[in-house]
Image (cartoon, rainbow, N blue to C red):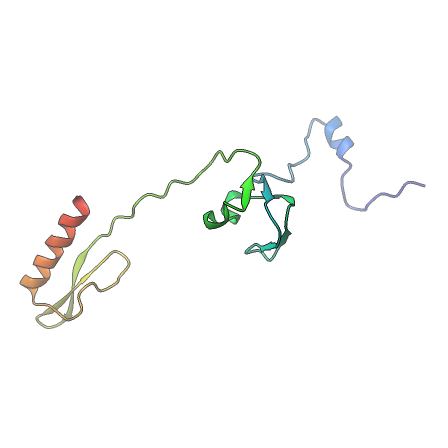
Length: 130
């Protein structure tokens, strides 16, 4: 007596219709965990020593790439591009200003007058152009 799972299409039937089964490892590559010990991924998955497993490249931190080695070549490495700092002057109180970067972080320790804030802003923009 042959057992079949309910609500799961038969792969052979899909192939007959010209459909292909989805790849279970789409976007993943094969990795090897060198040495002993275990490695716990951010998803909670535990990889034991000397084992081969599938994972996406963004799931393995670059700092662990010496003990976790890709067995298939990584084709899509993301290139980190520098983010434009986007420095600007924002008023703090009447007559006093702050120099702020693109993330909203205040770069000066104390509030500055407009002319001193302008000098600091020009100096920061000059450093980013170098």
